[in-house]
Image 1 (cartoon, rainbow, N blue to C red):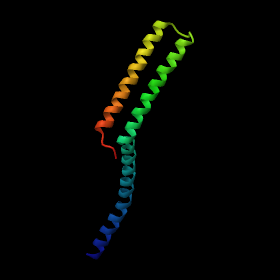
Image 2 (tube, rainbow, N blue to C red):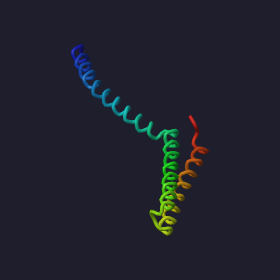
Image 3 (cartoon, helix red, strand yellow):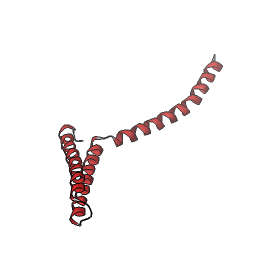
Image 4 (cartoon, rainbow, N blue to C red):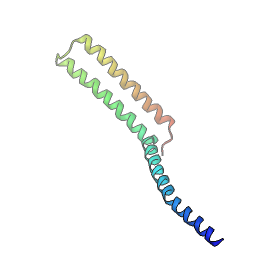
Length: 102
């Protein structure tokens, strides 16, 4: 009987280490994913995206001022860039209101 208990203990200990390693790896992976999706990170990404869209529209203003594009092409591109900026900015402000800050 003691021999069977000893064999069971050996089997359990040999299965524990790989299972624990797999668990730790998966836990670290889950933490990395959750860190990327944290509310603070998402808000920062929204704010950065809005700033990028605003910078793109500002660059278009400089482009038309320098005579590098036609007014018609500029107006279409500028409207798209400003629409993108306002949509991203609105989403950022809405998220700030609805996502609890930690």
